[in-house]
Figure (cartoon, rainbow, N blue to C red):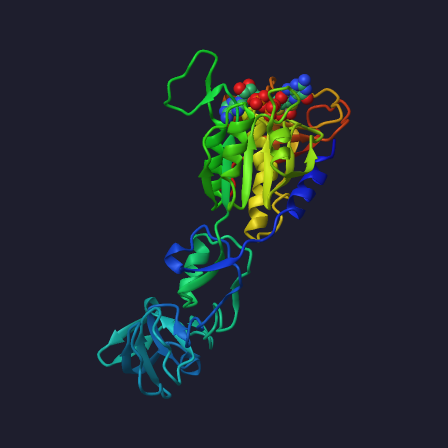
Length: 404
Ligand SMILES: Nc1nc2c(c(=O)[nH]1)N[C@H]1C(S)=C(S)[C@@H](COP(=O)(O)OP(=O)(O)OC[C@H]3O[C@@H](n4cnc5c(N)ncnc54)[C@H](O)[C@@H]3O)O[C@H]1N2
Ligand code: MOO
């Protein structure tokens, strides 16, 4: 059995970054940039006032109070045509261009208008409350790097940079194929000995949340014809994800049926719990990730392998490092040779450190517990008995991107 790290490395090596396409900025949310976002304008385009007040020459207000002649009025969106001369001030508002000749803004709270003059009570240094041209960015500056997921902030920045179209990665089409005679879709009649399929819907949601397009292939029965026919429908997708049928029983057909259909298996079985029967390969040019059927195993594998796989297809940096440190909230016995991903809750110790406490039962069918968990607590293979308070690695399950 290969390690979790080795499995992830091999999966990433078996996937190629998808081609780019062009989208209008209003459709860019949740897409991954295929090239750097480069400013097409300078912001602000000219020096502007950061406050409502008076544009002055700082030298004129070096000693206060002083009286300046009002030479003009400039709200945002307009421009003062003249030049502010010695002893003059221009009424100005936030965002308006600072007139030529002026080099500072006196805020209106520090001055009083008296007819056609303004009496300044507080002096200002040159440059005060003036936003220089290009303070935010200049034309040609890189705002967001290729490989970045476009969130609301980046959409706003692209707009400010006057970039109406973006080159983004095509959305990965991920075919999802649950297998098993015992599973039916939610809402369908449930026969004797049958259960409702949770994997397909959870994985489709996971893919969609990551900006991919889930393709529902239906449910493959535990017979060779059904599985072969439905898996064939994955042609044209960027990734096929199966669940179930991955283990060693004679009804676990995925490996053998897809093998007959041309699956070039890269690996099967990894030193991980849950998730031991994970498999990866190439089926007629389509990468194939075979997840275990147990709902918790399937979703933990989605976090650890499908998430980086989709990220890779989208040209994003490796997300494997989305781990954090915490302290252990309960004593744990020795671990065996499989890397363990324990469902755990998070809280804070009295001194503010993150604390991860695993649930006492860790059955890989227990979806309710998975939903109640805040993180996965990682235990290395062969970890010795470990006392509460020891440092541990965790994989958070919350967060916006790839949240479970
Ligand atoms: N003798 C051995 N038995 C098993 C081993 C082993 O090494 N030796 N591995 C165990 C491990 S670990 C896992 S994980 C499971 C995974 O097996 P499969 O991937 O073949 O999954 P199935 O047998 O098809 O199903 C397992 C379990 O999950 C339920 N299931 C399946 N699909 C869905 C779905 N879409 N939604 C909800 N639940 C689903 C299914 O009913 C089973 O209860 O094998 C162990 N056995
Ligand atoms: O590895 Mo299985 O995934 O224990 O439940």
